[in-house]
Image (cartoon, rainbow, N blue to C red; front, top):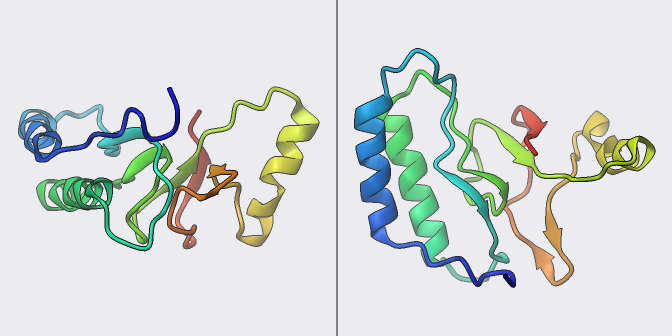
Length: 133
């Protein structure tokens, strides 16, 4: 659907995430945590529910498991400025176009998912970076 149509985060997201952390925090195959995927919301001049829920899930994860890295959301709307990891989603299939799209990484300005009306995310701040999709 359109940007924002699926973005109805609530406190129940945090409660469900806490249950998952309690269940899985000692699982040996988990190398890092990502509480949210593909949140789409433009940055605003005010704090939104998505900002609060993302921050709460990030902080809860860091408290529950300080030994593993945490990314606040995979792709699009990163809301935690100093998350342990930063990513983007790119579905570019042409190798030359992908190389151009990602060229800024070499100088500390990696590709960030954006909307024509403005940014989705806080800016990249030097964290480890990867294209996760």
